[in-house]
Amino acid sequence: HRTNGYVKTDIKHHGVRLACERGSRWNRHAFNRWRDIGKTIVEVPTGSGSYYLKVDGIARTEVSASARPSVQHGIPSSYVICRKDPDQDEVRMSDFHYDSSTGQFGTLLVAADSNSCSMPISIEMPSVQFSNPVHAFGSQIPLVTLMDIDGSSNVLESKLLDQIQAPSTCANFKMIWPNFVQDSASGLYYVEDRRLELYDTTNSTTITKSRMLGNRCPRVPRTFLNEDTCIPRADCGAAVFAGAFRLTAENMRKFYELDNKYVYRLTNL
Image (cartoon, one colour):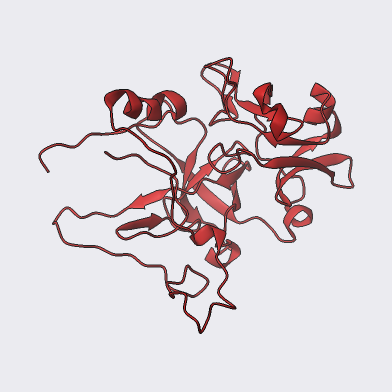
């Protein structure tokens, strides 16, 4: 079975497509339901009348004072991102900000703290927006050309990187998630959606693509020589899934029903 899953590092025959590589994926919605569940959003004033919505100290978007979720929904200025509403099967964190075909805005579920996630508040999924990227990040956001993703009506707003526009270069991208870009055509801002990269093995030969040193993920084993200085990097950790999972048709269908992901079964390989 295959799905375009989220991973953080190279495994053996596949890995993460770097943010500055052609074909990397970018979203308009500011929060990611795979990476951000359980994390805390903090509203931080920008000093110019608006507010940053920050996670782990990184600005994800900027909103006006009146558009702050704390003002609109009467919650504290920091709040936790929750999983789907347990009482409403259809209410879950969305993978889009706005669906132009239906006029529907995406959903973000939050609560004052993790204990309150049993009764989350449904708010509008914010889009990525910055009035002054240099103030938000200390440097300009890379200017790029983005292209549409073809072939699926379930993909809303997401785009693929086509080219990096001068004077921006690959050096302007971070190795760790999240990166942000500005689309040269629309002027809109996007956040990185780090995805699995599959490699062509049609000729049945083994293909290995490694990202070695040079600000990339190292493959040095931990020994007594480096155990005091060897520090795990969150962006280099292999994907780990806990718990048992029965490979039944019903369970496989949940990949689509819960997260709009297609899963393909291959036979006679």
